[in-house]
Structure formats: structure tokens, C-alpha cells
Length: 200
Image (cartoon, rainbow, N blue to C red; front, side):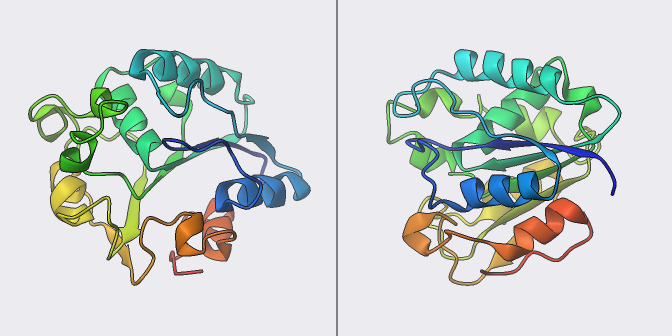
């Protein structure tokens, strides 16, 4: 078995409930013998970008050396990851591939004081995170009816990042409200980065 280390990052107001697909994924990967880090980030209801970036750097530094390192980020943690890339956060160079799931759009973040600090400043990501600057093989996936992405994921993030977003019909925000307590294809992707992501 190829040794792998996984860092699974949650979103806003997520207290890592056992019913969520990220918890399910962490359990499945652990059962298969992989190293899995699924941290509770500080103050998930009122997060601070700088604090989350510090935690991200710490967890990246703690991933096992000599293994394939994989990051799975959902919702607000997608923005956390993009800020980290824009700042060239220590530890990023050791990451082998990344899955970005259901990022909330700028217009949505602007409506909530608790998370508006995670917004992109102006056209920062468009300038600095184009397809040639995302150093890691990266997949971007979202529901085609995500209420937190009214502009659509391609317009909101895909074009600026130089990525072709993968749309999952009827998947909404890929959260518990959308029925994502398990998600078999994300487990398959974790084990094989060429896997096509599909609805649950």
C-alpha cells in the first residue's frame, strides 16, 4: 500500500459531527491504515483567518515525511487554503494533491461579519493564483445548485484559478443538509487521484 497522509479541513460552523462525510472519510482512511489529521479548527462559529492559517501551517508541518500528502478542504477551508497559497505558507511545498470542495462565494462571505475576513482582497487570487501558480495538482468540485455559490463555482473560482470545476447535480453545499453523511467517490479519489467525483 502506498503510504499516504491526509489533512481534512472543515468549514464554518462545522464542529466535526460524526455524521458528516469528512468524519466518515477520516474513519475510512484510518481503517485502511493511512495517517489522517482531521483537526477541529479554533472558534469555528467565529473563525479568525490568521489563527486558522497558523493552525494550517502547524498541521502541514506535522504530516508524515516520506508519504504522499493529500489535502481535502470543504467550504470556508477552501478560502483558507487559497489564502495560504497566496502567502506561500510554510509546509505547502510538501503537499502532493488537493481537493477543494464547495467554496462559498465572495458575495455570500460579504453578508456574514463572522467570515468576511476570509474574502479575497480585490483580484488577489485572479492575479496570484492562476493555473500556473497553483503548484499542486488541484481539483475543484461543487454542487450545481449550491446556495452559497449563486454565481456558480466556475465563475466564482474556476476561471480565476485556471481550473475546470466539476459540477455535481443536486449536491447543494455537499454537507449534511444535502445528505452527505457519506461520499464514496471522495474516498475513491483519496486513494486514486484520477477518480471521477460523483454524487453520493
